[in-house]
Amino acid sequence: MTPALIVLLAVVGLPFAILILMRPVYGLYAGVALSGVLITPNFPIIGEKLAPPDAPLLLSLIGLFFSIALGAHRRLPVPEPARFAIKALGVFVFIAAMSFAANATFRGADVFQSLIEVLNYVYAYLVLVAFVILVDDWAKWERFILAWMIGVAVVAAISTAAAFGVGPEWAQHGGGRIKSTVRSVNQLQAYLGPPIPVLFGIIISPRWPRLRIPSIAVMAMVFLALAVTGSRTAFVMIGFAVVAIAIYSIRFMHQNRLAAVVTAFAAVGFFIFAVNLWQTVAERGTAALPPTMRAIARPIERGLFTTGIEEQLGVRARQIDIVADHWFENIPLGVGPGNFIEVFNHPNSVHNTYLGVLMEMGLPALLVLLAALGAITWGGLIAAQYSRNQSRTVMLRMVTVAFLLVCVYGLGSFGLRQRPFWLTGGVVLSGIILTLGQIPALTGPARRPPAPYRPRDSNAFATRRSHLRNI
Image (cartoon, rainbow, N blue to C red):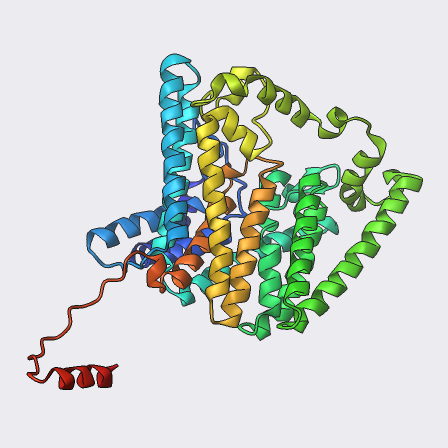
């Protein structure tokens, strides 16, 4: 990096840094918009843990710290589902720290890499808590969603351009597969998969009628971007999102006919495309397809021309075998965060969030994590039922489905290392607090102000009458 470039970045970035320090919530907007930009140098020790979105997120945390110290932030009542989820995730991070300490002391594993893994969890948890504190009204909540969708549109547009051969060379993953602005196709799925139901919510919501056409265009690019990753996890996420949207459309067809129409057209188009692609691959193979279509057909090809679970799962089959053979030996605290590769001499970390947590941090950490995921999902659905605003009801349901998509992504990759897990969880928790936080029964015992002093009436009957009159 040349001195001139450093000076330019300082001049351009300084005003934004000051703005974020003064208004920390702007750091969350910038962070989620940039979370799909992960092409960074491989730094010493920390590797690829730091990326462009971390600059505004760290500034947001610093700004929040000074805001709390000065007493300039507004505290909202936290309802039970959100309170439980926040505490459970905090306990999970604490168990991760205990696992690191125990394994660093007695096992002698790679201390630096494991410590960085723990610090990554602490940082992500602080970002989630900052989200809950800073996004304290519906206007900020909606701005966060719009900033998120702007970032999604940029990343999906680059993937689409690369798929048609006019994008930058660094967006290519190889073999016709597209990774856009991230390091690997697995990271791209984590960022572009969850927004599918959110874009659908914007399309059918009465809140943003002018954004319907752009949202349809962005959704089409997202589907293409996920397809050209050539990943089975991406296809599973697309299928889950389509099924969830279809269930929503059928369940609430009487409330929103536009949802049913959009879903019907999307489902028919997806079905026709999938059937034609399947027939082409089955009859002529992928050699007859253009390079981009070969990437899309890659999961179909592996399903048609591979036999046996081990051949289809690839490296994941070996990882499942290792977990099945050794998880019982490491029940309390696992082998340590990030130590799977070193302890079992395996080239990759576990490509599954839940098996990875079980192996690296033990069974208690997995149970606490599942409890937190359940509380966030249940709270999001309950908040949607209590909401009296139609647009917010739709969006609360859709961001909850987006969080479930992050959980589905965790079946094929270690999702806790991806920023979308914590940011999507934060937007659901914030929606829960803004909705259910207004219900005293869910935020603890109601505190009533003391009744004003009134002199007692000597006539008991008159006292009763005046009391009834006040009621």
